[in-house]
Image 1 (cartoon, one colour):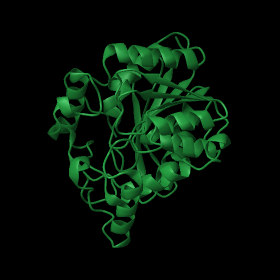
Image 2 (tube, helix red, strand yellow):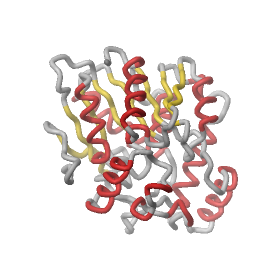
Image 3 (spheres, helix red, strand yellow):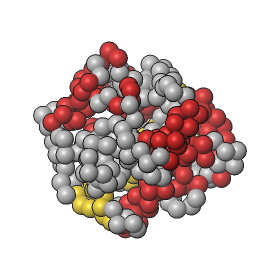
Image 4 (cartoon, helix red, strand yellow):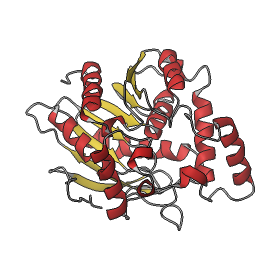
Length: 314
């Protein structure tokens, strides 16, 4: 296992890279780093969104290390440098979010807990934030605090709507087409979406960096989700909307949302924050879905919220 770099996105020095095996036999790529400060404040466990890769977060990893944190991260199954399930490696697919639950179990048990200094904090984006909520609720993982960025607790302004997406994905999966790629705008890869029309970030340089990672490192890239993935995601989001979901989470959690996010529902994130026993929400003006990949003024607001919430940071 290794990490890959391109011009303008070097691998942070001092990486320890390897693979771990899930309970159902899937190989996951992981990486961890020590803090770059004298004093270590603990470990931030960084969890990506769907279709992302460790390489995309090199800048964020550097920011965390400079704040005094060790960093541990990994690629979910089916993306990045982890094992792919389908013959077509570009398709993002799982049958159930329980598969992602097992990924996080393996990462925590085999990497974060034995090899990384406590306390352990979660920094999770989008799909990763939903998995983090699920596993924390079930008591499968133990974090001191959760920072959940643009959590996938409900779909935003996409069409079809979430109820219709669930019905369509359920039907396609039932007739044996669950491994077919979801068509339409959701099937477009990032290199086919111009910056002016993107929903991810308002920063052209960081957007281009993501495009370059996707195009120059095809070995870690993944494209559109399948109907099976969409069906699994809709079921997981519906579970998260149940009245007893939020109150069952006892770990202090901060949800950070972008005011311009169209991919996930800002209203649903607000409702989740209100339902948590110890939760709050910060909405950043001008931010889209990928807040950690945003313009510098937006990122400054993100880090101010992070520093105020995570003990010792800042």
